Amino acid sequence: MKSCLRTSETFMPFFLSDDTCPNLSIVISTSASWRFMNGSNTLYCSASYTDSSDDETSPRDKQQKNSKGNGDFCIKNIKQADFGRREIEIAEQEMPALMALRKRAQGEKPLAGAKVVGCTHITAQTAVLMETLSALGAQCRWAACNIYSTQNEVAAALAEGGFSVFAWKGESEDDFWWCIDRCVNVEGWQPNMILDDGGDLTHWIYKKYPNMFKKIKGIVEESVTGVHRLYQLSKAGKLCVPAMNVNDSVTKQKFDNLYCCRESILDGLKRTTDVMFGGKQVVVCGYGEVGKGCCAALKAMGSIVYVTEIDPICALQACMDGFRLVKLNEVIRQVDIVITCTGNKNVVVREYLDRMKNGCIVCNMGHSNTEIDVASLRTPELTWERVRSQVDHVIWPDGKRIVLLAEGRLLNLSCSTVPTFVLSITATTQALALIELYNAPEGRYKQDVYLLPKKMDEYVASLHLPTFDAHLTELSDEQAKYLGLNKNGPFKPNYYRYGNAFLFSSYFDRPVGGSRDNRVKKETNI
Image (cartoon, rainbow, N blue to C red):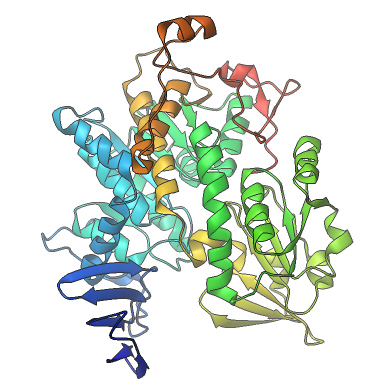
């Protein structure tokens, strides 16, 4: 049997065995989607939609409307909506907890009256979250927290579905803030809940529209960068509303930060560079949960992994996990790959970039683009060469070049995708945090930063167990009494750390209020 690999410009013949692949054809379109068609059954497995280059008009200069005549959105191309809808439907299959929340909300709307303004990565997984929030009764307006992570086809599907979305892949810095402002500055509509990833949305409202906080009930924040900014506001006495720290919930730390990054670091590096990991020398800056995931994945692939760390506890964990703890300047000349995941700034400065070997790959797995000093590379003596999407060669006068990925922004969501099932855990945690803050009686939460109640963490985990056909053991009355527990949980105290890694608090830096045992955490690693 003869089939062909089809693109918009070429036909590349290849051969498949009739015995192993009867009636199978593969079509790869300019959207970079893979459609496997066998008879009437179709399985779609796709990377993010890649636009054709025939339309370079800025979305801000376009007049677009969906099929219902609504134009309260700004995206790349509304015509991609059908493709985006298929992406969302695929994601739904791997997000059982959110689908369970929708089913349970059919008779009640715990977010009725909620007006949620969000600033997160706009992906198929986020779309499932947004549609779940809508099913729970909320109105949503959304912008992207990263200029490269938006899946344009998903944004189109959301706009077609009636959501006010302002985002597209490849925004400029000005576009980024314009989109956030369009979500917030709306005549006749004011948010009463914030869902943020990185703190930029919260910062913008504080800076431009501080009076809005009079009607905002709470903030839900999922990243280390954003949580750090919230703790700074709390410490200064400037936090106006209660905030929920999703990043340090067990379900975020122990699943998203660890397992998600363990898989997506390899995916992002492979898609962008085709690098072979075996035998490569890699330095991972930061041994928090994200760093642990990256190190574990690279070690399993045969890489020689070094770790840099400022926290002696995380450093000791790295040593006992079999990694060599070094200072970055000790290995910068010899390593093949540099990965930052600290949540800090200026981790890789120009001095280190100058000393890197020819062909060194440099990337970031932290939220913000501050970890690598990319600005220092934009000088006349250095040449930038775009070799493929999100991959730049920065070339020195002597011919040496480094491979910079996503301009120092988040690698996995800028250059690849992340495991949907893990994001289901985080998204469900976000949804429950919104429900908790929105429905909490007055006085339960003060103007401070809180963790999600332990009972809700356990509930999120329990919603994902049926996927594995997993069966929990139940305590007998005698056992529950012996342990001093309620038979239905919570099963662990708040200080229980679920394994070998956690972000620790300092007794020497206390914020206003009483969350997290009245301690501000010195958050040095994701």
